[in-house]
Length: 115
Image 1: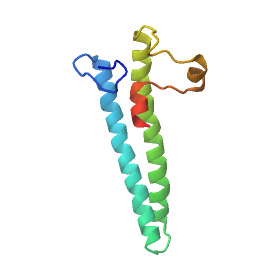
Image 2 (image 1 turned 180 degrees about the horizontal axis):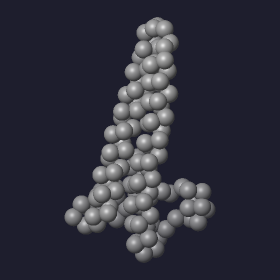
Image 3 (image 1 turned 90 degrees about the vertical axis):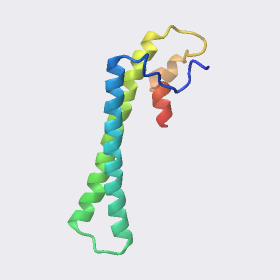
Image 4 (image 1 turned 90 degrees about the horizontal axis):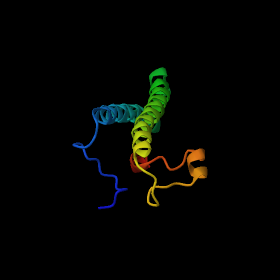
């Protein structure tokens, strides 16, 4: 099995990793709620209804909520990746060029799964 696979071994994970994954999952549910609000607002606009305050609030609030929650979910995964990268000894398989890390690229195994 490839050591760089995206599989998660719950038995080998620490308690902090499991809690962080739960937090990430909750943030992803908030993303779903925000995208649902955004979609509902777009659906109302496409039906030809008059633009009202609740529709604008649904569009703006849903979009902002989804963007904020997505950023928080990615940050939670980055915390797990930073701990995992610090624990792994450098090898030819998991080494990344310094310029990629400086630019914020190469976020790790779990962050890459979301992209």
